[in-house]
Image (tube, rainbow, N blue to C red):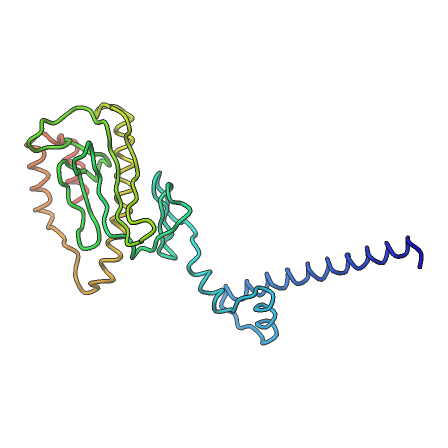
Amino acid sequence: MGFLDELKGKANDLKDKAKVALDESEKNSNIKKKIKNEETLSVEEKVFFEKYNKQTVEAFVIGEKNKFRPTKRTKHLIIDDDSKQWTTVKTSNKTFKYSELLSYELIEDGESVTKGGVSLGRAVVGGVLFSGVGMILGGLTGKKKSKNFVTEMKIVISVNNPDNPSIIIPLVKKKMKKDSKDYKKLAEDAQETLSYLDMIAAYEEEKISPDKKPNEKSVVEELKEYKELLDAGIIDQEDFDRKKAELL
Protein backbone atom coordinates (compact mmCIF):
# COMPACT_ATOMS: atom_id res chain seq x y z
CA MET A 1 0.00 0.00 0.00
CA GLY A 2 1.38 3.35 -1.00
CA PHE A 3 1.63 6.41 1.22
CA LEU A 4 -1.32 8.08 -0.50
CA ASP A 5 -3.52 5.01 -0.03
CA GLU A 6 -2.57 4.92 3.65
CA LEU A 7 -3.63 8.57 4.07
CA LYS A 8 -6.93 7.85 2.32
CA GLY A 9 -7.51 4.87 4.61
CA LYS A 10 -6.91 7.00 7.74
CA ALA A 11 -9.19 9.71 6.40
CA ASN A 12 -11.96 7.17 5.83
CA ASP A 13 -11.49 5.79 9.34
CA LEU A 14 -11.79 9.26 10.82
CA LYS A 15 -14.87 9.89 8.69
CA ASP A 16 -16.48 6.66 9.89
CA LYS A 17 -15.69 7.48 13.54
CA ALA A 18 -17.11 10.96 13.14
CA LYS A 19 -20.32 9.51 11.68
CA VAL A 20 -20.61 7.01 14.55
CA ALA A 21 -20.04 9.79 17.11
CA LEU A 22 -22.68 11.95 15.43
CA ASP A 23 -25.18 9.09 15.33
CA GLU A 24 -24.56 8.28 19.01
CA SER A 25 -24.95 11.94 19.98
CA GLU A 26 -28.24 12.17 18.11
CA LYS A 27 -29.42 8.90 19.66
CA ASN A 28 -28.52 10.20 23.12
CA SER A 29 -30.44 13.44 22.50
CA ASN A 30 -33.52 11.50 21.44
CA ILE A 31 -33.34 9.32 24.56
CA LYS A 32 -33.03 12.44 26.74
CA LYS A 33 -36.18 13.82 25.12
CA LYS A 34 -38.00 10.58 25.90
CA ILE A 35 -36.88 10.76 29.53
CA LYS A 36 -37.99 14.38 29.86
CA ASN A 37 -41.36 13.46 28.32
CA GLU A 38 -41.59 10.58 30.83
CA GLU A 39 -41.71 7.98 28.04
CA THR A 40 -40.68 4.38 28.76
CA LEU A 41 -37.18 3.41 27.59
CA SER A 42 -36.26 0.05 26.15
CA VAL A 43 -33.56 -1.97 27.91
CA GLU A 44 -31.19 -1.23 25.05
CA GLU A 45 -31.86 2.52 25.26
CA LYS A 46 -31.31 2.54 29.02
CA VAL A 47 -28.03 0.61 28.74
CA PHE A 48 -26.83 2.90 25.92
CA PHE A 49 -27.81 6.06 27.82
CA GLU A 50 -26.05 5.06 31.06
CA LYS A 51 -22.90 3.94 29.22
CA TYR A 52 -22.81 7.08 27.03
CA ASN A 53 -23.48 9.57 29.85
CA LYS A 54 -21.71 7.64 32.62
CA GLN A 55 -24.70 8.13 34.93
CA THR A 56 -27.96 6.33 35.66
CA VAL A 57 -31.28 7.44 34.23
CA GLU A 58 -32.47 8.14 37.78
CA ALA A 59 -29.49 10.44 38.46
CA PHE A 60 -30.19 12.30 35.22
CA VAL A 61 -33.84 12.80 36.17
CA ILE A 62 -32.88 14.18 39.60
CA GLY A 63 -30.30 16.46 38.02
CA GLU A 64 -32.83 17.82 35.54
CA LYS A 65 -35.35 18.42 38.30
CA ASN A 66 -32.82 20.40 40.32
CA LYS A 67 -31.36 22.31 37.39
CA PHE A 68 -31.66 26.07 37.85
CA ARG A 69 -33.75 27.70 35.12
CA PRO A 70 -34.80 31.28 36.04
CA THR A 71 -38.51 32.03 35.81
CA LYS A 72 -38.54 35.37 37.67
CA ARG A 73 -35.94 38.10 37.93
CA THR A 74 -35.52 41.46 39.64
CA LYS A 75 -32.52 43.74 39.51
CA HIS A 76 -31.00 41.86 42.46
CA LEU A 77 -32.79 38.49 42.72
CA ILE A 78 -33.15 35.50 40.37
CA ILE A 79 -35.77 32.81 41.04
CA ASP A 80 -36.68 29.41 39.58
CA ASP A 81 -40.27 28.60 40.57
CA ASP A 82 -40.03 25.08 39.17
CA SER A 83 -36.98 23.79 41.07
CA LYS A 84 -37.74 26.08 44.06
CA GLN A 85 -34.33 27.70 44.01
CA TRP A 86 -33.08 31.28 44.08
CA THR A 87 -29.91 33.29 43.96
CA THR A 88 -28.83 36.92 43.77
CA VAL A 89 -27.02 38.66 40.94
CA LYS A 90 -24.06 38.94 43.32
CA THR A 91 -24.01 35.17 44.08
CA SER A 92 -25.17 33.92 40.67
CA ASN A 93 -22.53 31.16 40.71
CA LYS A 94 -24.33 29.59 43.69
CA THR A 95 -28.02 28.77 44.00
CA PHE A 96 -30.03 28.29 47.19
CA LYS A 97 -33.10 26.21 47.93
CA TYR A 98 -36.24 28.02 49.06
CA SER A 99 -35.84 26.20 52.39
CA GLU A 100 -32.41 27.78 52.94
CA LEU A 101 -33.86 31.28 53.24
CA LEU A 102 -34.01 32.32 56.91
CA SER A 103 -34.60 36.07 57.03
CA TYR A 104 -34.02 39.33 55.17
CA GLU A 105 -33.78 42.94 56.21
CA LEU A 106 -33.66 46.36 54.56
CA ILE A 107 -31.19 48.60 56.38
CA GLU A 108 -30.83 52.32 55.82
CA ASP A 109 -27.96 54.22 57.44
CA GLY A 110 -27.53 51.52 60.07
CA GLU A 111 -31.23 51.43 60.99
CA SER A 112 -33.63 48.61 60.14
CA VAL A 113 -36.49 49.77 57.89
CA THR A 114 -38.24 46.44 57.31
CA LYS A 115 -37.47 42.79 57.91
CA GLY A 116 -39.05 39.45 57.14
CA GLY A 117 -38.54 35.71 56.90
CA VAL A 118 -40.14 32.33 57.51
CA SER A 119 -42.51 32.59 60.50
CA LEU A 120 -41.78 36.34 60.64
CA GLY A 121 -43.96 37.78 57.89
CA ARG A 122 -42.88 41.30 56.90
CA ALA A 123 -42.76 43.98 59.55
CA VAL A 124 -42.02 47.66 58.99
CA VAL A 125 -39.60 48.73 61.70
CA GLY A 126 -38.59 52.34 61.26
CA GLY A 127 -40.48 53.59 58.22
CA VAL A 128 -43.39 52.73 55.99
CA LEU A 129 -42.93 50.39 53.06
CA PHE A 130 -45.99 51.14 50.95
CA SER A 131 -46.44 48.20 48.59
CA GLY A 132 -49.10 49.93 46.48
CA VAL A 133 -46.62 52.61 45.48
CA GLY A 134 -43.55 50.37 45.52
CA MET A 135 -41.29 52.75 47.43
CA ILE A 136 -40.26 53.65 50.94
CA LEU A 137 -42.25 56.55 52.38
CA GLY A 138 -41.73 58.65 55.46
CA GLY A 139 -38.22 57.53 56.28
CA LEU A 140 -36.80 56.40 59.58
CA THR A 141 -38.51 57.48 62.78
CA GLY A 142 -37.67 57.26 66.46
CA LYS A 143 -35.38 59.36 68.61
CA LYS A 144 -33.30 60.50 65.68
CA LYS A 145 -34.59 63.35 63.59
CA SER A 146 -35.71 62.18 60.16
CA LYS A 147 -33.21 63.11 57.45
CA ASN A 148 -33.98 64.05 53.88
CA PHE A 149 -30.96 62.15 52.58
CA VAL A 150 -29.41 58.69 52.87
CA THR A 151 -25.76 57.64 52.69
CA GLU A 152 -26.16 53.85 52.73
CA MET A 153 -28.97 51.41 52.02
CA LYS A 154 -28.68 47.63 51.69
CA ILE A 155 -30.59 44.36 51.88
CA VAL A 156 -29.11 41.70 54.15
CA ILE A 157 -30.26 38.10 53.57
CA SER A 158 -29.54 35.37 56.13
CA VAL A 159 -29.22 31.88 54.64
CA ASN A 160 -29.00 28.43 56.23
CA ASN A 161 -25.85 27.68 54.25
CA PRO A 162 -22.34 27.44 55.78
CA ASP A 163 -20.70 28.71 52.59
CA ASN A 164 -22.91 31.80 52.32
CA PRO A 165 -24.55 32.46 55.70
CA SER A 166 -25.15 36.11 54.88
CA ILE A 167 -25.64 37.90 51.56
CA ILE A 168 -25.43 41.69 51.40
CA ILE A 169 -27.00 43.52 48.47
CA PRO A 170 -25.77 47.14 48.41
CA LEU A 171 -28.35 49.63 47.10
CA VAL A 172 -27.00 53.07 48.05
CA LYS A 173 -23.28 53.66 48.55
CA LYS A 174 -23.10 57.45 48.60
CA LYS A 175 -25.09 60.40 49.92
CA MET A 176 -28.38 60.72 48.08
CA LYS A 177 -31.47 62.85 48.58
CA LYS A 178 -34.63 60.89 49.41
CA ASP A 179 -36.74 63.01 47.10
CA SER A 180 -34.46 62.31 44.14
CA LYS A 181 -35.50 60.11 41.21
CA ASP A 182 -32.46 57.89 41.75
CA TYR A 183 -33.43 57.13 45.34
CA LYS A 184 -37.03 56.39 44.42
CA LYS A 185 -35.88 54.01 41.67
CA LEU A 186 -33.53 52.20 44.09
CA ALA A 187 -36.36 51.99 46.64
CA GLU A 188 -38.67 50.47 44.03
CA ASP A 189 -35.98 47.91 43.12
CA ALA A 190 -35.57 47.07 46.81
CA GLN A 191 -39.33 46.68 47.27
CA GLU A 192 -39.59 44.34 44.28
CA THR A 193 -36.77 42.17 45.65
CA LEU A 194 -38.30 42.10 49.13
CA SER A 195 -41.68 41.14 47.67
CA TYR A 196 -40.18 38.06 45.99
CA LEU A 197 -38.38 37.14 49.21
CA ASP A 198 -41.78 37.45 50.91
CA MET A 199 -43.16 35.01 48.34
CA ILE A 200 -40.42 32.45 49.07
CA ALA A 201 -40.92 32.82 52.83
CA ALA A 202 -44.69 32.41 52.45
CA TYR A 203 -44.16 29.23 50.41
CA GLU A 204 -41.92 27.75 53.10
CA GLU A 205 -44.32 28.87 55.83
CA GLU A 206 -47.12 27.00 54.08
CA LYS A 207 -44.97 23.84 54.00
CA ILE A 208 -44.28 24.12 57.73
CA SER A 209 -47.88 24.90 58.70
CA PRO A 210 -50.13 23.79 55.82
CA ASP A 211 -53.28 24.02 57.95
CA LYS A 212 -52.45 27.42 59.35
CA LYS A 213 -54.27 30.25 57.60
CA PRO A 214 -52.30 33.39 56.73
CA ASN A 215 -52.47 36.18 59.25
CA GLU A 216 -54.90 38.31 57.30
CA LYS A 217 -56.26 41.61 58.52
CA SER A 218 -59.79 42.63 57.77
CA VAL A 219 -60.38 45.33 55.18
CA VAL A 220 -61.65 47.63 57.92
CA GLU A 221 -58.47 47.16 59.99
CA GLU A 222 -56.22 47.83 57.01
CA LEU A 223 -58.18 50.92 55.99
CA LYS A 224 -57.97 52.18 59.55
CA GLU A 225 -54.19 51.79 59.56
CA TYR A 226 -53.83 53.63 56.24
CA LYS A 227 -56.18 56.36 57.46
CA GLU A 228 -53.87 56.85 60.44
CA LEU A 229 -50.93 57.17 58.03
CA LEU A 230 -52.92 59.71 56.03
CA ASP A 231 -53.79 61.74 59.13
CA ALA A 232 -50.13 61.67 60.20
CA GLY A 233 -49.08 63.06 56.83
CA ILE A 234 -46.95 60.01 55.97
CA ILE A 235 -49.00 59.26 52.86
CA ASP A 236 -51.15 61.62 50.83
CA GLN A 237 -54.83 61.40 49.82
CA GLU A 238 -53.96 59.91 46.44
CA ASP A 239 -52.00 57.06 48.05
CA PHE A 240 -54.85 56.41 50.50
CA ASP A 241 -57.49 56.38 47.75
CA ARG A 242 -55.39 53.99 45.67
CA LYS A 243 -55.00 51.58 48.56
CA LYS A 244 -58.69 51.86 49.43
CA ALA A 245 -59.59 50.95 45.85
CA GLU A 246 -57.28 47.91 46.02
CA LEU A 247 -58.86 46.66 49.25
CA LEU A 248 -62.45 47.25 48.18
